[in-house]
Image 1: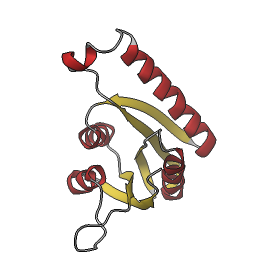
Image 2: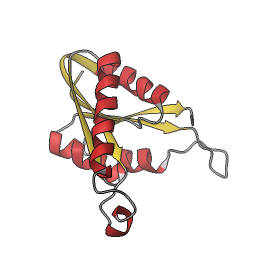
Image 3: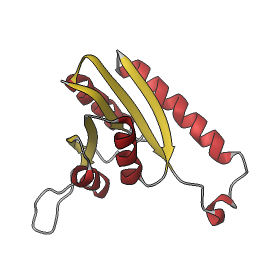
Image 4: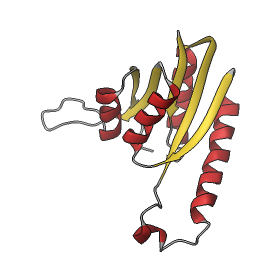
Length: 145
């Protein structure tokens, strides 16, 4: 079993998030820690930030943290932490895994077909799987909605 399991979730896709939580719970032992992380859109660029009220970013982060906490309480038991980060999805997931010393990252991938009919990973799950320093579990076949 894994000691530290990182689970990046898209809170806009609740069924997918629950499926990832279940997969992480299956891989966890008695003394495992699970960390849910959600990646918020970046408002850091001055051009982007100028279109939003000054407190918009803080409100988004607070709301995401609240939703992530509710997801954890409803679907996971044991030691669970939640975090909301800003940035590019794969880069932020990999940095969180490295900083936290994760043993396993549980990511989802929607079904996609390449030109030759082979199933391929999405860009985020592919990047995480290719670059992670720890094991990566890919939960395939998550619905688009």
